[in-house]
Image 1 (cartoon, rainbow, N blue to C red):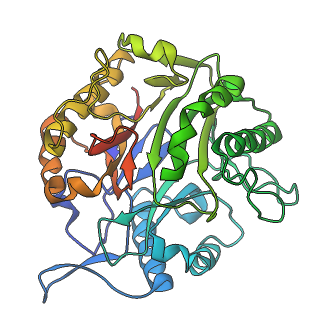
Image 2 (cartoon, rainbow, N blue to C red; image 1 turned 135 degrees about the vertical axis):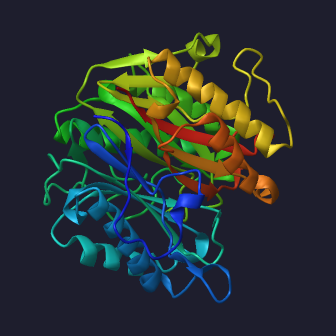
Length: 388
């Protein structure tokens, strides 16, 4: 099936045609939505605004999601994954967001990933929602003691995995390696419940706090212990705090029932890493996060210039897509993590996307992180593609 931008019949919140992203993209058996807050255009103030407290904002964001899903011929019952990006003030009111989610989905249970961020691009927004929809398949059964993981067309989305015990207390306080070990052991149980192992993991996303940095490299041995033989795509992002206040690290995992193949344009540095530039599973291409790191020299290029960094980053992303047999048109979703230093010129990155990408533009989410793993980097892009 061709990649198609989803165009809702009614979308009164803002004129989305002016942007270099799609509200949602239909590709293969999935529909992938951009991140959505409660933002809307105020014609009197002549600018975008966000109104209401947490519950009101979540209701508005889900109303947008519902309109986009309807434009794709789907409904909330087709949602298989929800990613909730929550700024620090929103974490304190997270129970309100969870209650609205329960109300929206009723008995339907998507996998839920909850990611605390430093801030959202709309400063008055408490939360941003990013949704994946498709054929709703198997899930971990209620009553197993495991949170809901969800399968759709052979892709399995695990919920956010934290290093917490049954009482909700942190495991391995102050020790990022111990917390990573606990996370992988929990994820192994979730995968096993669906008849899968770590050999079918195609993407990992880990979020860490600054306190984890000193020993973060040591978590590589945990990844080596559990992952492979085809290492997944991966991204690691710094945030000021995580879902549990004592957590140093938390993980999101995606797995596939299809055979996996590592995709590499010829970059030797990945031979010593526990992740691949991309992993192909069927027609899906799960890519690692990319920044302005020269794969040959391993040095940062365009230090201090987010626009030049983004152009270099997207060019490298497209090299991975092309190595898998794809084109720019196959890129269906991007998440852009930007540092506070990048914000002054971040709007100009839209011009880079318009220059290098192709219509239908991918769905996109932009988030503000504490920092990136290489401090000179101002932007990291986490991409996903669906091949023809």
